[in-house]
Image (cartoon, rainbow, N blue to C red; front, side, top):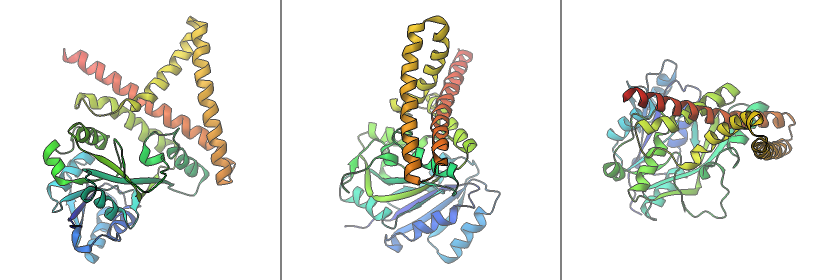
Length: 338
């Protein structure tokens, strides 16, 4: 095939624990060396991140360091795209490493199979060896934990499948000329909004199971809660800046939390409705108990059982609470704007 140049954009801020592994896994890909550049875009780090990147730069001139004075991710992505030399742009994560064939397989999907965007399958790994970290990683890989196909789906073969979103994707650079760059108002979820925009404009998004990324999940309940609370918040708050920033499945946690509030009030207002809600949440608890037992047995670690139950609850409740807060802020903002 005609081999295009690939520019890999890596937004980073205070990621000294993971940045070297992430960048080296990109450099060690089996894609032709002269067709690859890595643009690390630093959001004003205060730890050793910049020093580590400069150390890699001294060994490999394919790596370049750019500054992101605006700090936040969407600015970093756009800075990287504007400074890129490649015909294809890869958006990479600094907490993630990549299989050696990742770039080659995703480029193949664009060049040979007509996709505009291609990403790989994400394998979620524990950030540490604790039972809690293992449980969080298992929950984030569960279909009941998150509905994203690139995180949870087991594929029957290695064929590229059409999906509505992927992580760590490679994009035709020309697609940004067609639909615009990342929305800089979206501090989070900017990749989801971009993929929705591309699909709306007729673009094809593919997932190649041959390409694997390895994401290191947060390993504390606080980290899990805060990350998903903010993700949930930005799903709804993004409506201030875009009409197409999420899909309906992203609202499931919102209805989950609102339904639980309804359960509490219905006990006093209308008993039949209370038992209806109670039945639904009984089924929910049954599913997370079953999943948690399976995780503990597969990991051969009984502590994983309790941590998995808590992780499911924290994941779903924090995301839903974030969405409620986002919805509340939208209502308040629009009331005061009238």
